[in-house]
Amino acid sequence: MAEERTLSSHLIYEGRALKLRIDEVETPGGREARREIVEHGDCVAIIAVAGDSVLLVRQFRKPVEQELLEIPAGGIDPGESPEAAVSRELREETGYLPQKVERLGGFYAVPGYGTEYLYLYLATDLTPSRLFAEDTESISVVPVPISQVLELIASGSICDAKSIAGLLTFLEYRKQSNG
Image (cartoon, rainbow, N blue to C red; front, side, top):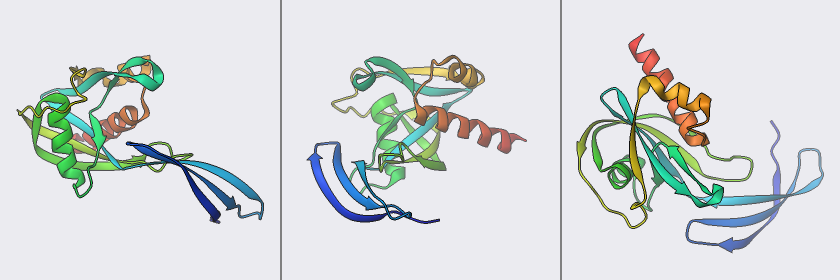
């Protein structure tokens, strides 16, 4: 498979959470093109299981101007392992600390224009352990029976890509483990 060759790269914005750059590339066919690329650090996405339920979070998302029902997720701090980020993020967003963390896979969030990779983890054996963070005060925890996950996805009640991909991966993993 042929790759695009980068001719030049220009950083045009650098914020707290992301950078935006413009790359001029040469396509495999020899033509020049422009690529707008959002650089964002890698993150963790977490399937937190408590009994027969998954713990989802409801929070307002300014870019889409609505509250979304999502799996817990968040950035990996510099020098932090994905596993450590799972424990920290889960504590911040749900108030639970997982005693068992297992990697289920991973995926790119928006590979058409962004660099963010999400490491998907299963977190189980949860114990209460609140860790407060400044931007989590408006998050509410919503336990959802595992049996209702597909219905919530099909109805559009769960509508963000990382949650859909993560939950479907978990359901397949669960089916393979039980079958």
